[in-house]
Length: 217
Image (cartoon, rainbow, N blue to C red; front, side, top):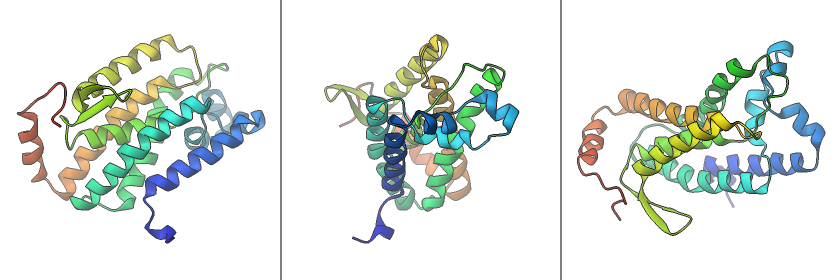
């Protein structure tokens, strides 16, 4: 196997799985790597904004994030190459940029709250999902393998869910990061298109003229 030819998505999933598994059996590891705004502010532990994106609350949390990243990440990598919108650097900038920026609102909100902590790749995964949706908003997505809806409708429901769960804030999963990661993913990809291939907007705008709540295909 030529590891140099593996998609970046595979390496990211591997890192998430490895570090999350370590965290499941090591509270000390979680303590050191989790996003903890209180310590980020006082001890300048900025690294937590990245490391917290590679650990998860439990196997279910890890599975759904990695399952989503696998399908949308591989699809986005193919799109970036096919449409000549950049290489793996473009993809990695999206992923790590979302990790950092999706944590900033939570940092400012909770920097003096000793009890607030969060973890998970949700911000980065959301950015990948919404960046991919931009290219085909009416593609079909099957929720729970059965309910067929369009990607655009999924995006609306996703944002509404994130806002609702963010207000409840009763777990260590940073639901606010879902929302801000999603918005970053859209904005980032729009900027990439403007720089690399502005003519692509004609195709994207044409797709928007043919909406389908339940997806085309």
